Amino acid sequence: MSSAHDAAGPAAAVRGAEHLGGAVHGASHAPGAASAAAEHAGGHAVPELDNFLTILQKQFGGVFDALVHYQDAVFAGIVILMLSIVAVAASRRLRKIPTGFQCLLEFYVKSMDDFARGVIGERYGRGFAPYVGTLFLYIVCMNYMGFIPFMKAPIALNINVPLALAIVTLITVHYHGIRSNGLINYLKHFIGDPWWMFPIMTPIHVMEEFAIKPGSLTLRLFGNITGEDVVIAVLVILTAGALPAFLPIPVQALFYPLALLFGLLQAFVFTILSAVYILQMTPHGEH
Amino acid sequence: MEPATLLGLALPLGVGIAALGSAFGLGRAVAAAMDAIGRQPEASGKIQTAMIIGCALIEALTIYALVTVFVLMGKVG
Image (cartoon, rainbow over all chains, first blue to last red):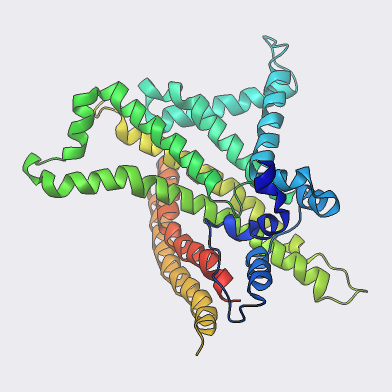
């Protein structure tokens, strides 16, 4: 770890490029200035606001290089910690007749239970309510991290976070498919309806289940949240750079209502599509 | 023209064209859903859920173009 991150400059400068899955550019035209130019372009290819980790890195360097490299894990961990603390604190002293905060959380749990049973069905729905509810709350909180000053939405500019969520959904869907249908019926699902069409239908079904569904879930969440945060960053740069000093209008504030709506909507879309994919794996005629 | 210039022209235009197609699709989908809710207000919950799923699938096509832009934006320079 230490020797790998001693070369701190390049590791930090390529950060912006690595977030997008390694779109690091080759050598530019002048070989002498190639490394500096490539580093510069890599760091600033997509405008990105500073968060408290990058500020600390600019001040102190050292241990913060590693933290900035894994900053999305840090911010996702902050979200997980916050949600865990809220959940533990709210369920510490449960009352038969709820008051205050317990009321709010019970309302959330009830509505997620209703949602899961409404989409997935009475038999299996209740079992998936915790998964669906956690997914929604987690994604909403991660999306809204981008609005807190000196924080960053973990999903923005890092495709690994939505990919991990999509893989969790993929595993859940197929585990549920095997458990509720049995292995034979689960495999029959891939053959399709007229069984003699299987040379064509099986590759299509396998591709749809294992590549297209997780891929579209990932890219939809990643593209929306990244787009939002990049627009906010561009507007902040516009505010800081283009407006005269006596007119400090926060232009990005005009975009915040739309971004708040999109953050909620994309979390809901991810959740509802996960629930629908689970529904498609439940045995037919029982939902 | 330089490749960077071409990309700088093509990337926003590509997103614009993708958004145009998505907008037509979304318009049709939402109009049909509103029509259905108007005919059967008691089924509005189910119709809304189906509409949101469809809208997400349509809108994903624009997002693919946007992701392409993010990937290639570093090459514009």
